Image (cartoon, rainbow, N blue to C red; front, side, top):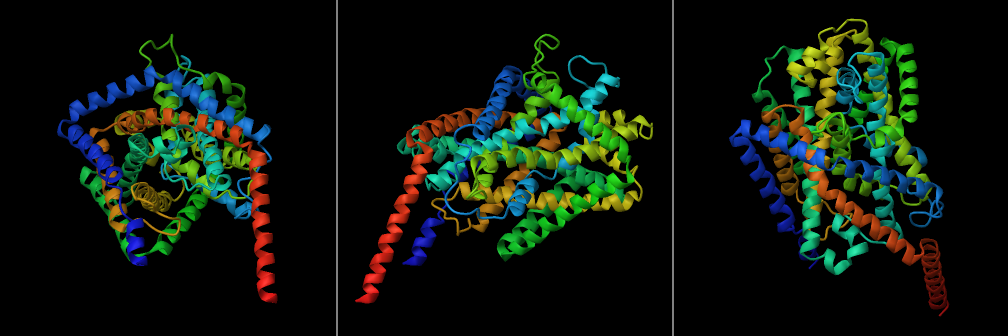
Length: 537
């Protein structure tokens, strides 16, 4: 009987499993059959979404930041997610939040993004000028700072309330939307549409990351081992990652994935320390300090910049960069919000918001301070005068490897970066495939795991999509995958926020939590009395 029950709980939701896969494979076939047409479709789609909805993305992300500030300073700030002491120590909790932001593509962006802004600065500034350097150090801190993380934070508060106060087991966006739409609507076809959009959003976000990480790994292999770069190498890399994940899934090697994650973290901190020690330390510290000041001084200007006069086609700096980043963050926002809420039992709302806004941002800023300023220093001192040509003609992966090759002991460093990229991508695909498998499984509990074939299926689909985007070529192809799928998610997030504020007002959060605690205490006292009476009899 128990076996049958377990099988029923692990039943795959056929609609949430097959329909997104059919959509993704259909898109891959359509784009893959004619790469020239695919490039035109990608360019037109990117221009339409970012140009038409620039204002919407800017207003939405800033509104998320306002929600977070209200939660830090407003009347709900001292309330807790659940009763009792925190589940994790403060150090462990902050470490989990900190490391969640350290994705596989972070070191790539930290190295080359400031240079992108130097050669193509915002606000009509001329490239390579002092003003361009100013924006090159400020904008990365803006894009990877408080605003993007505020999406994770604001959604995390809503999910945390559902998890720990209302005691709802929320794994899907439809469950959170029930706060406004009601359980009946959220559980019918509307709920299915919401969850399908969530799955497609996650797929689009991870495809962007894979589309950046795979060429980087290939370039590192070329530099370390002298092997000729080819599409076959990219295909082989993705197949390698999927095989490793398949072995871990079917062999139950959870310790293996944990070991890979730990090794990756040690490598990240090792290379960060190495670049700082052998690099221009004073320049790094001074430039980071000035970049931080410039970002804070122009924060509102950057938060609402859409360039309506200088670029009438709405396909300029803010669309290419800022809107892309907000879309990329939005594609991950649900799963990150759920993750942060899950690990924050016993924390106050103020603690939660401050930790998400600062721990993740500070962790990423350290990498931009070290790697980004090393790139700028190297270019300023004419050690890489051809860097702009490399970036424009060969892509960001080649440019990044070129920068890293200027460090002492380049072969050793590049090998370490190759190992880190490979391990980071394994954990990334595994974690995302695991999340997608949970979303496409019916009635799964916290103690159970989705079927192994389910996880592997998602890993294969992610690999296929990443390969198609790379075959189309260019940064815009991988950017578009995030931009396109994130737009409908913004409307779903708005439903979640409206429902959240409606529910906490109706519940009177503070009284609701105190009454729940009193009820629990009363029940415990009754049980104690009954137990004592039965023992005396």
